[in-house]
Image 1: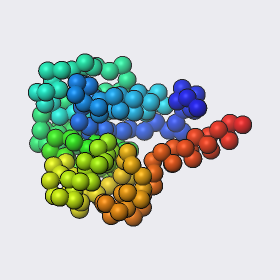
Image 2 (image 1 turned 45 degrees about the vertical axis):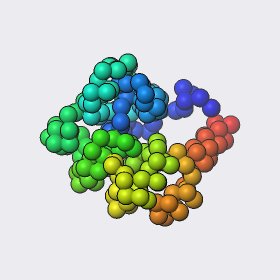
Image 3 (image 1 turned 120 degrees about the vertical axis):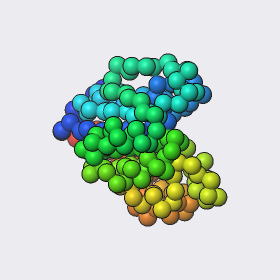
Image 4 (image 1 turned 60 degrees about the vertical axis):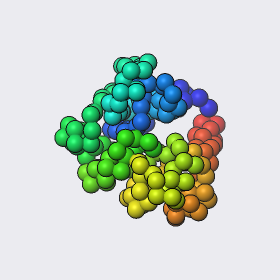
Length: 189
């Protein structure tokens, strides 16, 4: 089933995504993932704001300054993020924090302090995250912050997350999507 034939969402959600980069795919596999996700959410009628920390590497290699979907804004650091975007983080229906976000630990703490909607950690780098959490070198997440998210979205399955991160309530995102598409297909028949 193609995303273009999915019905519109029952209500428009305000979604804030904080990710490594959406403006530059140069040496960055995150950008294409975020572009696809943001495009699909906007097509469903949701209001999506992507917040990206303005870093020199991505600034010098931007290949999508103004996407034709959603809104992208840059911030300088966590202090600027808090000052300028606190209201949007608090009012969003869903706030997603991606792996490898600069100052991710401080950003996670900010989200968990101010967000009133659903919060999610989107782990695009699960093997790296698991290894760095285990050896204490993870610069964008700490083990004690994980339970503070309502959702942990991962590129791996639930049993791995239960074993390595200690999450109790996890399931394989692909399996969830497969079940969701099967239910949509059955309902359409």
